[in-house]
Image (tube, rainbow over all chains, first blue to last red; front, side):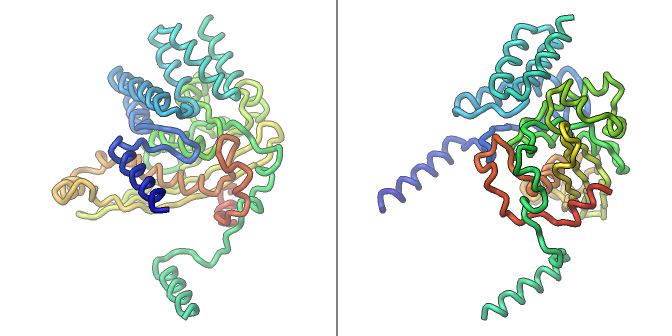
Length: 118
Length: 228
Protein backbone atom coordinates (compact mmCIF):
# COMPACT_ATOMS: atom_id res chain seq x y z
CA UNK A 1 0.00 0.00 0.00
CA UNK A 2 2.82 2.31 0.99
CA UNK A 3 4.72 1.57 -2.19
CA UNK A 4 1.61 2.02 -4.30
CA UNK A 5 0.88 5.47 -2.93
CA UNK A 6 4.49 6.51 -3.38
CA UNK A 7 4.21 5.32 -6.98
CA UNK A 8 1.25 7.62 -7.51
CA UNK A 9 3.20 10.55 -6.07
CA UNK A 10 6.12 9.86 -8.37
CA UNK A 11 3.73 9.57 -11.30
CA UNK A 12 2.18 12.91 -10.41
CA UNK A 13 5.61 14.50 -10.11
CA UNK A 14 6.71 13.14 -13.47
CA UNK A 15 3.52 14.48 -15.06
CA UNK A 16 4.18 17.87 -13.53
CA UNK A 17 7.83 17.99 -14.59
CA UNK A 18 7.11 16.78 -18.11
CA UNK A 19 5.00 19.87 -18.67
CA UNK A 20 1.81 17.86 -18.22
CA UNK A 21 -0.19 17.93 -21.44
CA UNK A 22 -3.77 18.82 -20.64
CA UNK A 23 -6.24 16.50 -22.32
CA UNK A 24 -10.03 16.48 -22.21
CA UNK A 25 -12.46 13.77 -21.03
CA UNK A 26 -12.52 12.25 -24.48
CA UNK A 27 -8.71 12.24 -24.41
CA UNK A 28 -7.99 15.00 -26.91
CA UNK A 29 -5.20 17.54 -26.86
CA UNK A 30 -6.26 20.97 -28.18
CA UNK A 31 -3.21 23.14 -27.50
CA UNK A 32 -4.25 26.77 -28.00
CA UNK A 33 -6.66 25.92 -30.83
CA UNK A 34 -9.36 28.51 -30.13
CA UNK A 35 -6.83 31.31 -29.67
CA UNK A 36 -5.19 31.06 -33.10
CA UNK A 37 -8.53 30.21 -34.75
CA UNK A 38 -10.09 33.35 -33.29
CA UNK A 39 -7.20 35.43 -34.63
CA UNK A 40 -7.91 34.04 -38.12
CA UNK A 41 -11.63 34.82 -37.80
CA UNK A 42 -10.97 38.32 -36.60
CA UNK A 43 -8.21 39.17 -39.01
CA UNK A 44 -7.43 36.59 -41.72
CA UNK A 45 -3.93 37.84 -42.53
CA UNK A 46 -1.29 35.50 -43.94
CA UNK A 47 0.54 35.77 -40.64
CA UNK A 48 -2.47 34.72 -38.54
CA UNK A 49 -3.30 31.85 -40.90
CA UNK A 50 0.30 30.62 -40.71
CA UNK A 51 0.21 30.78 -36.89
CA UNK A 52 -2.99 28.69 -36.91
CA UNK A 53 -1.40 26.16 -39.29
CA UNK A 54 1.60 25.88 -36.97
CA UNK A 55 -0.73 25.38 -34.03
CA UNK A 56 -2.64 22.62 -35.87
CA UNK A 57 0.65 20.90 -36.78
CA UNK A 58 1.71 21.08 -33.15
CA UNK A 59 -1.61 19.59 -31.95
CA UNK A 60 -1.14 16.66 -34.36
CA UNK A 61 2.51 16.23 -33.30
CA UNK A 62 1.79 16.26 -29.55
CA UNK A 63 -1.22 13.94 -29.97
CA UNK A 64 0.90 11.44 -31.90
CA UNK A 65 3.77 11.64 -29.41
CA UNK A 66 1.41 10.99 -26.50
CA UNK A 67 -0.50 8.26 -28.33
CA UNK A 68 -3.69 10.30 -28.27
CA UNK A 69 -6.35 10.31 -30.94
CA UNK A 70 -6.08 13.58 -32.90
CA UNK A 71 -9.19 15.64 -32.09
CA UNK A 72 -12.07 15.80 -34.62
CA UNK A 73 -11.55 18.22 -37.48
CA UNK A 74 -7.93 19.14 -36.74
CA UNK A 75 -6.36 17.20 -39.64
CA UNK A 76 -9.09 18.16 -42.11
CA UNK A 77 -8.71 21.80 -41.13
CA UNK A 78 -4.96 21.78 -41.68
CA UNK A 79 -5.46 19.99 -45.00
CA UNK A 80 -7.96 22.63 -46.10
CA UNK A 81 -5.64 25.52 -45.24
CA UNK A 82 -2.76 23.83 -47.07
CA UNK A 83 -4.91 23.15 -50.14
CA UNK A 84 -5.45 26.90 -50.42
CA UNK A 85 -1.69 27.26 -50.76
CA UNK A 86 -1.73 24.46 -53.34
CA UNK A 87 -0.01 21.95 -51.05
CA UNK A 88 -2.52 19.47 -52.45
CA UNK A 89 -0.64 16.27 -51.83
CA UNK A 90 -0.28 16.97 -48.13
CA UNK A 91 -3.92 18.07 -47.99
CA UNK A 92 -5.15 14.80 -49.51
CA UNK A 93 -3.05 12.79 -47.04
CA UNK A 94 -4.52 14.76 -44.13
CA UNK A 95 -8.12 14.30 -45.40
CA UNK A 96 -7.48 10.57 -45.67
CA UNK A 97 -6.19 10.43 -42.10
CA UNK A 98 -9.22 12.33 -40.83
CA UNK A 99 -11.63 10.02 -42.68
CA UNK A 100 -9.81 6.97 -41.34
CA UNK A 101 -9.96 8.21 -37.76
CA UNK A 102 -13.54 9.50 -38.04
CA UNK A 103 -15.62 7.66 -40.68
CA UNK A 104 -18.38 10.26 -40.09
CA UNK A 105 -16.32 12.76 -42.09
CA UNK A 106 -15.93 10.58 -45.19
CA UNK A 107 -18.85 11.87 -47.30
CA UNK A 108 -17.93 15.46 -46.57
CA UNK A 109 -14.21 15.11 -47.28
CA UNK A 110 -14.71 13.11 -50.47
CA UNK A 111 -16.99 15.82 -51.74
CA UNK A 112 -14.53 18.50 -50.76
CA UNK A 113 -11.79 16.65 -52.58
CA UNK A 114 -13.79 16.28 -55.80
CA UNK A 115 -14.69 19.99 -55.64
CA UNK A 116 -11.03 20.92 -55.27
CA UNK A 117 -9.97 18.76 -58.22
CA UNK A 118 -12.32 20.63 -60.55
CA UNK B 1 -26.82 19.27 13.16
CA UNK B 2 -27.42 18.04 9.64
CA UNK B 3 -30.54 20.16 9.47
CA UNK B 4 -28.56 23.28 10.29
CA UNK B 5 -26.00 22.40 7.68
CA UNK B 6 -28.66 22.21 4.98
CA UNK B 7 -30.15 25.45 6.17
CA UNK B 8 -26.79 27.18 5.74
CA UNK B 9 -26.39 25.76 2.25
CA UNK B 10 -29.86 26.97 1.34
CA UNK B 11 -29.11 30.40 2.76
CA UNK B 12 -25.83 30.68 0.85
CA UNK B 13 -27.63 29.59 -2.28
CA UNK B 14 -30.29 32.25 -1.88
CA UNK B 15 -27.79 34.99 -0.97
CA UNK B 16 -25.52 34.22 -3.91
CA UNK B 17 -28.49 34.82 -6.18
CA UNK B 18 -28.42 31.28 -7.39
CA UNK B 19 -31.70 29.91 -8.63
CA UNK B 20 -32.03 26.90 -6.38
CA UNK B 21 -35.77 26.59 -6.56
CA UNK B 22 -35.98 24.69 -9.80
CA UNK B 23 -35.38 20.95 -9.58
CA UNK B 24 -32.80 19.74 -12.04
CA UNK B 25 -33.79 16.94 -14.34
CA UNK B 26 -31.64 14.01 -15.34
CA UNK B 27 -30.11 13.99 -18.82
CA UNK B 28 -32.05 10.84 -19.67
CA UNK B 29 -35.42 12.31 -18.63
CA UNK B 30 -34.76 15.59 -20.45
CA UNK B 31 -33.32 14.15 -23.66
CA UNK B 32 -34.60 10.56 -23.94
CA UNK B 33 -33.94 10.20 -27.67
CA UNK B 34 -30.21 10.76 -27.04
CA UNK B 35 -30.18 7.37 -25.31
CA UNK B 36 -31.62 5.54 -28.32
CA UNK B 37 -30.44 4.87 -31.87
CA UNK B 38 -31.43 8.47 -32.62
CA UNK B 39 -28.30 9.75 -30.88
CA UNK B 40 -26.19 11.36 -33.61
CA UNK B 41 -22.51 10.62 -34.01
CA UNK B 42 -21.72 13.82 -35.86
CA UNK B 43 -22.64 17.49 -35.49
CA UNK B 44 -22.62 20.15 -38.18
CA UNK B 45 -22.43 23.60 -36.57
CA UNK B 46 -24.22 26.31 -38.51
CA UNK B 47 -22.83 29.86 -38.52
CA UNK B 48 -23.92 31.54 -35.27
CA UNK B 49 -26.94 33.84 -35.25
CA UNK B 50 -25.86 37.03 -33.49
CA UNK B 51 -28.74 38.93 -31.88
CA UNK B 52 -26.47 40.74 -29.42
CA UNK B 53 -25.10 44.24 -29.81
CA UNK B 54 -21.48 43.02 -29.95
CA UNK B 55 -20.31 42.32 -33.49
CA UNK B 56 -17.23 40.46 -32.26
CA UNK B 57 -19.29 37.93 -30.25
CA UNK B 58 -19.72 35.54 -33.21
CA UNK B 59 -15.98 35.10 -33.63
CA UNK B 60 -15.45 34.25 -29.98
CA UNK B 61 -18.28 31.73 -29.97
CA UNK B 62 -17.34 30.13 -33.30
CA UNK B 63 -13.71 29.72 -32.22
CA UNK B 64 -14.69 27.95 -29.00
CA UNK B 65 -17.67 25.77 -30.03
CA UNK B 66 -15.99 22.73 -31.57
CA UNK B 67 -13.95 21.78 -28.53
CA UNK B 68 -16.73 21.15 -25.94
CA UNK B 69 -18.94 19.20 -28.35
CA UNK B 70 -16.00 17.07 -29.52
CA UNK B 71 -15.00 16.52 -25.89
CA UNK B 72 -18.57 15.37 -25.18
CA UNK B 73 -17.94 12.55 -27.67
CA UNK B 74 -19.21 13.80 -31.02
CA UNK B 75 -17.57 14.21 -34.41
CA UNK B 76 -17.77 17.92 -35.12
CA UNK B 77 -17.25 19.05 -38.69
CA UNK B 78 -14.44 21.62 -38.77
CA UNK B 79 -16.18 24.99 -38.71
CA UNK B 80 -13.30 26.72 -40.46
CA UNK B 81 -14.19 24.68 -43.57
CA UNK B 82 -17.93 24.49 -43.20
CA UNK B 83 -18.28 28.25 -42.65
CA UNK B 84 -16.56 28.85 -46.02
CA UNK B 85 -18.91 26.39 -47.70
CA UNK B 86 -21.98 27.99 -46.12
CA UNK B 87 -20.78 31.45 -47.08
CA UNK B 88 -20.28 30.33 -50.68
CA UNK B 89 -23.88 29.09 -50.67
CA UNK B 90 -25.06 32.47 -49.37
CA UNK B 91 -25.62 31.33 -45.79
CA UNK B 92 -23.90 33.94 -43.65
CA UNK B 93 -25.65 33.03 -40.43
CA UNK B 94 -27.92 30.26 -39.19
CA UNK B 95 -31.07 32.34 -39.80
CA UNK B 96 -30.77 31.65 -43.52
CA UNK B 97 -30.55 27.92 -42.83
CA UNK B 98 -33.67 27.72 -40.66
CA UNK B 99 -35.96 26.97 -43.58
CA UNK B 100 -33.70 24.39 -45.23
CA UNK B 101 -35.06 20.83 -44.87
CA UNK B 102 -32.60 19.15 -42.50
CA UNK B 103 -32.10 15.94 -44.58
CA UNK B 104 -30.19 18.10 -47.07
CA UNK B 105 -27.39 18.38 -44.50
CA UNK B 106 -27.35 14.61 -44.19
CA UNK B 107 -27.05 14.26 -47.94
CA UNK B 108 -24.40 16.89 -48.62
CA UNK B 109 -22.27 16.67 -45.47
CA UNK B 110 -23.12 13.24 -44.09
CA UNK B 111 -24.05 14.99 -40.82
CA UNK B 112 -26.43 13.23 -38.41
CA UNK B 113 -27.40 16.48 -36.71
CA UNK B 114 -27.18 20.24 -37.11
CA UNK B 115 -26.57 22.72 -34.32
CA UNK B 116 -28.15 26.16 -34.32
CA UNK B 117 -26.44 28.64 -32.00
CA UNK B 118 -27.95 32.02 -31.16
CA UNK B 119 -26.09 34.71 -29.26
CA UNK B 120 -28.86 36.55 -27.40
CA UNK B 121 -26.77 38.64 -25.10
CA UNK B 122 -23.19 39.89 -24.97
CA UNK B 123 -23.32 42.89 -22.68
CA UNK B 124 -20.13 44.44 -21.42
CA UNK B 125 -20.32 46.55 -18.30
CA UNK B 126 -17.41 48.75 -17.31
CA UNK B 127 -16.98 50.83 -14.22
CA UNK B 128 -13.51 52.37 -13.82
CA UNK B 129 -11.73 49.49 -12.06
CA UNK B 130 -14.23 46.71 -12.45
CA UNK B 131 -16.02 45.09 -15.32
CA UNK B 132 -18.12 42.13 -16.26
CA UNK B 133 -19.77 40.62 -19.28
CA UNK B 134 -23.17 38.95 -19.42
CA UNK B 135 -23.35 36.32 -22.14
CA UNK B 136 -26.54 34.53 -23.14
CA UNK B 137 -26.49 31.78 -25.74
CA UNK B 138 -29.08 29.30 -26.88
CA UNK B 139 -28.25 25.99 -28.55
CA UNK B 140 -30.62 23.73 -30.50
CA UNK B 141 -29.49 20.38 -31.90
CA UNK B 142 -31.74 18.91 -34.62
CA UNK B 143 -31.64 15.48 -36.21
CA UNK B 144 -31.06 15.50 -39.97
CA UNK B 145 -32.85 12.16 -40.19
CA UNK B 146 -36.08 12.72 -38.23
CA UNK B 147 -35.85 16.56 -37.94
CA UNK B 148 -36.62 16.10 -34.22
CA UNK B 149 -35.03 18.33 -31.59
CA UNK B 150 -32.42 16.18 -29.86
CA UNK B 151 -31.02 18.66 -27.35
CA UNK B 152 -31.64 22.29 -26.50
CA UNK B 153 -30.28 24.61 -23.86
CA UNK B 154 -30.23 28.27 -22.99
CA UNK B 155 -27.21 29.36 -21.01
CA UNK B 156 -26.50 32.70 -19.43
CA UNK B 157 -23.34 33.53 -17.49
CA UNK B 158 -21.95 36.68 -15.94
CA UNK B 159 -18.17 36.73 -15.97
CA UNK B 160 -16.02 39.14 -14.02
CA UNK B 161 -13.53 40.76 -16.38
CA UNK B 162 -11.81 43.10 -13.92
CA UNK B 163 -8.22 42.66 -14.92
CA UNK B 164 -6.32 39.41 -14.98
CA UNK B 165 -5.39 38.35 -11.47
CA UNK B 166 -2.94 35.76 -12.81
CA UNK B 167 -0.90 38.59 -14.28
CA UNK B 168 -0.06 39.93 -10.82
CA UNK B 169 -1.02 43.24 -9.28
CA UNK B 170 0.58 45.50 -11.86
CA UNK B 171 -0.72 43.30 -14.65
CA UNK B 172 -4.21 43.49 -13.18
CA UNK B 173 -4.05 47.27 -12.94
CA UNK B 174 -2.91 47.59 -16.52
CA UNK B 175 -5.50 45.08 -17.69
CA UNK B 176 -8.29 47.02 -16.02
CA UNK B 177 -6.99 50.29 -17.34
CA UNK B 178 -6.81 49.41 -21.00
CA UNK B 179 -9.80 49.58 -23.29
CA UNK B 180 -12.57 47.03 -23.76
CA UNK B 181 -11.24 46.07 -27.17
CA UNK B 182 -8.19 44.37 -25.71
CA UNK B 183 -10.12 42.16 -23.30
CA UNK B 184 -9.62 38.47 -24.06
CA UNK B 185 -13.11 36.99 -24.22
CA UNK B 186 -12.01 33.49 -25.26
CA UNK B 187 -12.13 32.19 -21.64
CA UNK B 188 -15.60 33.77 -21.29
CA UNK B 189 -16.81 31.99 -24.43
CA UNK B 190 -15.28 28.72 -23.21
CA UNK B 191 -17.09 29.08 -19.92
CA UNK B 192 -20.56 29.62 -21.37
CA UNK B 193 -20.19 26.80 -23.92
CA UNK B 194 -18.85 24.38 -21.32
CA UNK B 195 -21.74 25.13 -18.93
CA UNK B 196 -24.33 24.38 -21.61
CA UNK B 197 -22.61 21.28 -23.00
CA UNK B 198 -22.47 19.91 -19.44
CA UNK B 199 -26.16 19.10 -19.83
CA UNK B 200 -25.70 17.21 -23.07
CA UNK B 201 -25.69 13.41 -23.14
CA UNK B 202 -22.29 11.99 -24.14
CA UNK B 203 -21.65 10.78 -27.67
CA UNK B 204 -19.92 7.69 -29.04
CA UNK B 205 -16.34 8.94 -28.62
CA UNK B 206 -16.76 9.68 -24.91
CA UNK B 207 -15.60 6.88 -22.60
CA UNK B 208 -18.84 7.13 -20.55
CA UNK B 209 -21.27 7.14 -23.48
CA UNK B 210 -24.69 5.84 -22.44
CA UNK B 211 -23.78 5.89 -18.76
CA UNK B 212 -24.52 9.52 -17.93
CA UNK B 213 -28.35 9.32 -18.02
CA UNK B 214 -28.72 9.65 -14.24
CA UNK B 215 -26.76 12.91 -14.00
CA UNK B 216 -29.24 15.57 -12.90
CA UNK B 217 -27.79 18.65 -14.57
CA UNK B 218 -30.62 19.86 -16.79
CA UNK B 219 -32.72 22.88 -15.89
CA UNK B 220 -36.12 22.27 -17.56
CA UNK B 221 -36.73 26.00 -18.04
CA UNK B 222 -33.36 26.45 -19.79
CA UNK B 223 -34.14 23.48 -22.02
CA UNK B 224 -37.45 25.08 -22.97
CA UNK B 225 -36.20 28.67 -23.25
CA UNK B 226 -33.77 27.76 -26.03
CA UNK B 227 -36.75 26.92 -28.23
CA UNK B 228 -38.52 30.24 -27.86
